[in-house]
Image (cartoon, rainbow, N blue to C red; front, side, top):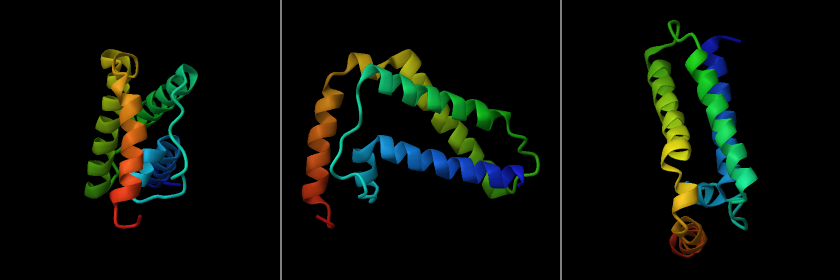
Length: 120
């Protein structure tokens, strides 16, 4: 498997995992497999998601991208920056510890999405 193909495979796997772990986000983007759930906000689950993001960031940063097509190179840069942002948000900003409104926003936002979107 080429490094570019590996990148796209790992990106798809990671995005599917992220949607499964964040059901309200999945609903917002049109994936309705988890419409009956909310994310797990226990501290150990939050830490696990952070570790997965940090591991994916390390893996993507270590990839040799010289042979990537222009589009794949752009996609790679976007994914690295997105993952870096998630890791930074967890480690420095710590929204999961500082914003109790996030839990309420997820619950109410999930319901509003289910009621207002065209599919509902």
